[in-house]
Image 1 (cartoon, one colour):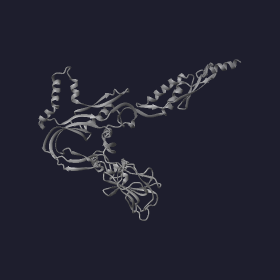
Image 2 (cartoon, rainbow, N blue to C red; image 1 turned 60 degrees about the horizontal axis):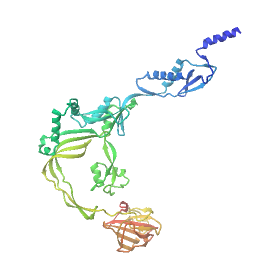
Image 3 (cartoon, rainbow, N blue to C red; image 1 turned 45 degrees about the vertical axis):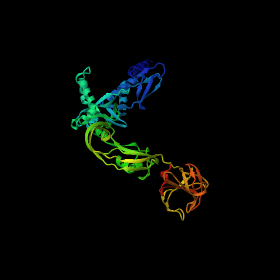
Image 4 (tube, helix red, strand yellow; image 1 turned 120 degrees about the vertical axis):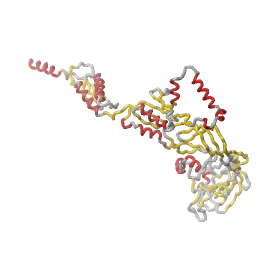
Length: 513
């Protein structure tokens, strides 16, 4: 008995740091798992948070970079009479080893510059200013303007925005007097006189100050603090190239009076093939466009655009504005040039607004006409021309306009219209209002109806089974004029439909609304 007692006392003395007597109070020993791997056992759950914090600090102390360490901790608790625990040192070392294997690439403090959808990461705020200043210096060769970074009060988070300020205004603000007198008042009076139109006209061309009048960013710029991988930081030269290099952007262009596809292509410096590919409604270079139609074109612009105003002296040929004579008896598609234009020559002082390198608008401040321009005079119609609708409801397009293999003996290989396969007896309506000029049988066409329209066009409806109108009758758009059929040279029930202009057949599908 004595030997057994001494043995128990001896074992307790040796193993007291690893074993503890546990009271029955629920889970009292905890296995700790870090990222699903066992790292040790502790007697108190509150010890785990402290050990994890210490482990993170040890891992972070090995690098100057900000890093993301993946750390997911879980425990398994149990209630035991005697439990074996690991020392804090052992658990800490195991955690450090595990976290070191879970470190993601080191992150560095940075500034993310956002310009619309374009973003770039720069290492310091000085680099941010350098990049933005480079975009300004492209147009400010005399270095009169600087980039100012200010807190964006529209954002709750710590964010900056950028603006362009005139260096002289910054210097003046620093020395501005408390009252409006002296030099400050004199300057305002001078500016007011300089802006007066009558005073401008009295000045000689040599009296004007030419050059840059104002600069401003055309985009909203946002600068925010960030932590990014070192590989995501961009050096200053590449960042400057990135924000100033032009990139194609899709924009909507509204067709103006007198526009043609070829004219738009030349004016906007966009290949015709590009315009066709961007717009499903434009089939080829011969497709019709109408005033007010919106088409997609590409416009090369850099991510960061600069809006500037310059005052310039210009000697130029100029055109007088076109003069129009409205004719209420003509359609808007009708116009005749009554006088050809002739360019004039003048000297001007103009304030020109540019977006990057593209002139947006100009205001002529002073003008000296050396040769008067002769205006172009155009007589134009004001009446809205008739519209054209599909003459049947439904149907399957079975033959298109133009060259084809003749479907049957006697049929034309140069198809003058379009065919829709449709059941015999289907209703055929007038595509547009007009006067019936033929209603009966025509060679090849079978039973037909021809309608002459006020705008000079003619529509033809062929292979009918029954004609419901007569020659000389006036019909409105949508009026029932016939029933479809299979008469004449035909391979099956369908409607043949034509539109002719001055007797020449055109593709009807280009004129249907």
